[in-house]
Image (cartoon, rainbow, N blue to C red; front, top):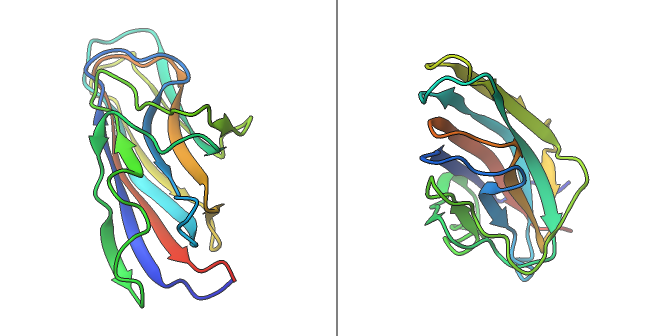
Length: 179
């Protein structure tokens, strides 16, 4: 592995204002095919919380890798934040490459992307009590989860969501030349 050239935070901030369905994406990025960079996610730190009407249910999300398809659309644009930079001053991801749900609608994954069968990380929260909070500190190891040019990540619902569910935090990532 080469020494990374750039370090970034990819922020996630969503509160469902309406229920979404199993399989819907609430946040996604795609490493542009022409980027020439490998994106490695080192960790996700954040909180999954619920402040809606209590129900005898759970909500769960998978962090799912995909390939093919188009960059995600709809929802809001996400601005990548610099952590430390060496060499490359900006991220390969722009606001057209990374999107977040607007709260009542899913991020659109156009062009028929192919998702891996199993997500590489799952987070869940019971929503039987209003005010439930689940802190998340997911460490993906020193090498991180690797996304080659043309691959992407979507946070997808495994179980249908409810109004009042929120996910806030940041992916810690670095970008490097592949050779």
